[in-house]
Image (tube, rainbow, N blue to C red):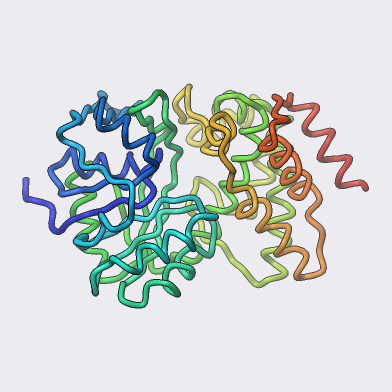
Length: 342
């Protein structure tokens, strides 16, 4: 196996960041994980375990993981993978700007549509690329991150991405370059609209998606989002098993037919959950404003309403404030239908 090229830093080493950086480090890459002090203390003590349903767990011992808590640790990095939550992007970029070496490649592996632009504005000395992670990763226990479904990473097609792609492939991370990365991000936003539904359900993803009332909630979100996209002239590319316009129809199918038609969608680890569920469980702010909130704002700019998405924003914010409860599918559906009729 050839040696991965360059040094890597992961800024925001939570679940996704530890998955990406840990996978690269396990393959021999020079990686520094930069994260919250408490989380990094766990890695210093226990090391990092990477698990998934598709391969045996891999453990990096404590002395095999380089960790830090401040962006200056990225000073020598050739590649910086940014995985902080969207709300933290601006501050993280400003802190990183004082330390990043000229010509470094910064890759945003974040949810939402605007993070690459935020990073470019703050980091003129760097080459900033957009990226996309198509699967969920959660912390199953301290020091262990679990990938709940298969998928292929996507990164903006640019010569500067070559070293990252080589390192990812040597680490067993499937990755492809995309010339239509803006459309990829728009399609991923549609996929991420389930994060709120899953978080409020309190259920594993596979269990939640198998129940039609929850899917009808998601179909309402998708229908509003697609209307806003059409009004804005946005055409998301196909990154899943069906084109975006067909998704609401598939979600509305009866359970038995959905299991047949969407078999690949349900190829999810039985324990996989959304990152938003994990945020609520840990008492952290969620990314609801850059998911459902993005649709509400886009719809409003074009004279449209997105009441189901807007109600989900409110429910998630209530849960962030300590009013968390597990919604049944019928109860959540009734809540969204009431909002749509108001």
